[in-house]
Image 1: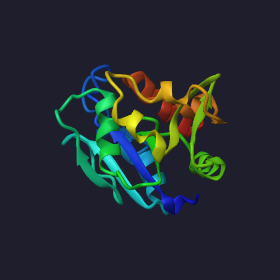
Image 2 (image 1 turned 180 degrees about the vertical axis):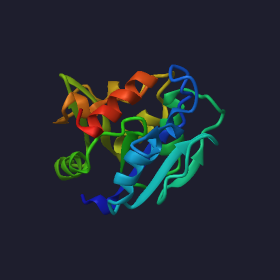
Image 3 (image 1 turned 180 degrees about the horizontal axis):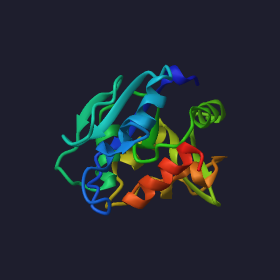
Image 4 (image 1 turned 90 degrees about the vertical axis):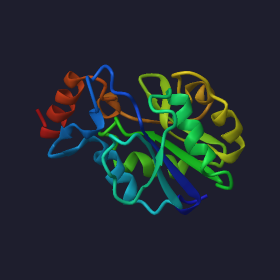
Amino acid sequence: MTVADIVVVLLAAGRGSRFGGSKLAATLAGRPLARHLGDRLAALPFKRKLIICSEATPEVEGFERIALEPIGAPLSRSIATGIGEIPDACAALIALADMPLVPTSHFENLIQAFDGDHIGTSVADRTMVPAIFGARHFPALRSLQGDRGAAALLRNAPAIPLDQHLALDIDTPEDLARAEAIIQGR
C-alpha cells in the first residue's frame, strides 16, 4: 500500500478546556498551532485529507473541513465522524492537530511499515496515534465511546518509535511554551 491509498483524518475539534480556549488557533512559531501538523501532512500525496473540526479551528490548506456534531463531542465522536466520511477507503491515518512537532519523516516511516492491518507510534513504551488503520478496523473505530481515542485498538499493533519531546501534545499554555522552546532550540 502507498501513501496514495491512505486517507488522513486530522482531529482538530477539541474543546481546549485545559488550554483556556481555542488552542488550535494559538500561535506557535508564527503560525496557528493547527497548521503545523496540517501543513506537514498536506505536503504528502495522500488520497484524501480530512480535518474534523469546530468553527474555531483555523483553516488548514489542502484539507476538507468536516464539522464535528454536536459541538464539544468527545474524541471518540471525532474519530467516528472521520471514519464515517470514508467508507470505501483502504486505510486511514489518524493524527491529532495538537501534536505539532511530529516530523514528516515519522509519517513516511509509518506509511513504509504499514502492512494493511494497523500500525501506531511508540512513545515511552506506549502505543498511540499517529497511527494507520486498515479498513477492517473501521467498524471498531466508528464504535469507540467517550473521550478515549484509538489506544485500545493499538495494544498489540506494531509501532514506529518517536522521541517523547516530538510527541508533545499541547493541552495547556505551558505545553505551548515548551513546544516554542523546542522549535527555537532552547
